[in-house]
Length: 270
Image 1 (tube, rainbow, N blue to C red):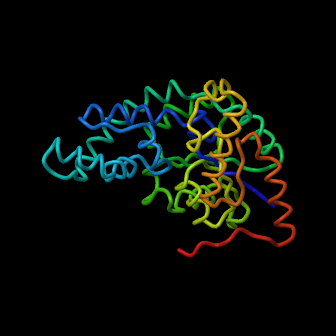
Image 2: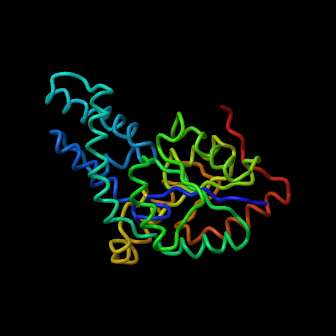
C-alpha cells in the first residue's frame, strides 16, 4: 500500500502554470544584457536554480550573446553571481504566484485522512521556500517535510532528496511512495529513487498558462493545448499522467491495486 506522496511545488501544488520562476529568469538575463524568452526559461525547469542558470547559459543563442557582451565564456563565478541576483527577483514573483492550485488541499487532506504521509521536494533554494511555505500554509497546504536545492549534495534528477524524505517519514520501501511532478528532472528524481511517478500536465510547466488564461481559452483551443501538454508529460515516461493533483486519488487506488497484484514500478539502474 502507498504510505507517502511526495509533491513538487511550482506547477504541481502551487502557482498554476509555474510562472514565478519564468518572469524572474527573463528579468535576470535582461539585467545582464541577455535576451531569453519564457520558452527558453522553461526548458531546464525542475533542476535546482544554479543548474538551471547554467543550462540557460549553455543554450547556443544565449552562449553567443554572453560572449559578445563579455568577450569570454561564462564561469561558475558568473553563475554564482546570477543566482544571487535571481533570488530576490524570484521572491517578488513567488509572492505574486503563491496561490495553491485548486483541488490540492482537498486531495492532501483526503490522503492524510487515509494515513498517507505528505512530503515535498523542490528546485527552489531554502531562502525562497522560507517565503513560499508560510503562504501555502495559510491556504491549508502544509507538507510534513520540504527538501530544497542545496539540502542534499546533489539535486534533481538525483534521488537524494527523495531518500531524505523517505528517511524522515520512516518509509524503507520506495514502491510505497509516489512522486508527483510536472518536469522531467522531477519525474526522473522519482524514477531514480524507484518509486511510482505521476506527471502533471495542465497545471504545470508543460502548458505554462495561468488559471485565468487557461479558463479564458475557447473550448476547442483548450482541448488542443491540453492534449499537447499531456503528450509532453507522457514523453517524460512517468507511470501515470494526470491534468492536475485534483485528479490524483483514482491513481493512488490504481497503484494500490497494482501493488496488491505484486506489480511494482520499474527500477532504474544507478
